Image 1 (tube, rainbow, N blue to C red):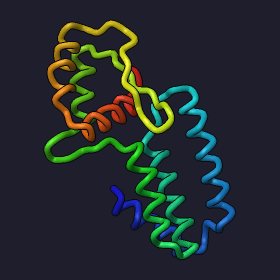
Image 2 (image 1 turned 120 degrees about the horizontal axis):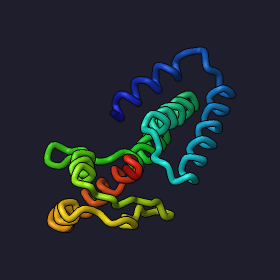
Image 3 (image 1 turned 45 degrees about the vertical axis):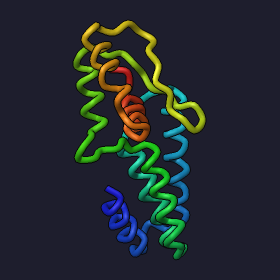
Image 4 (image 1 turned 90 degrees about the vertical axis):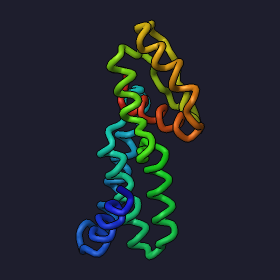
Length: 154
């Protein structure tokens, strides 16, 4: 997806419209909307995160600062995008867990995402979680936490 973000951002940056003010205003509106969603502790739609990364990178391309554009987009996508590798798919892990009746939720606290169990879950979901989650690496656990946060409560 980052390569796709690069291509879209470069295409938008080379166009005459939107102008700098329109990009800035759109970015501010997206920030406000994302803030309200996060404040309500609702799942953040990936399309908004992707749009924010594209606009940030477009603004950086227009300023001619390639390295800053790469840093901005990668930091915004990597924090909120679940890790999917050929060996492990965090979204699939969360979907299997939720299908078994899992009720754990993820919440964002400063620089980390915490996973909490507020409601009682089915024995099958508890067994799935207790058998598989402890065996995951730190990076995979963070990806599962991000996926739980993106999927919302149910």
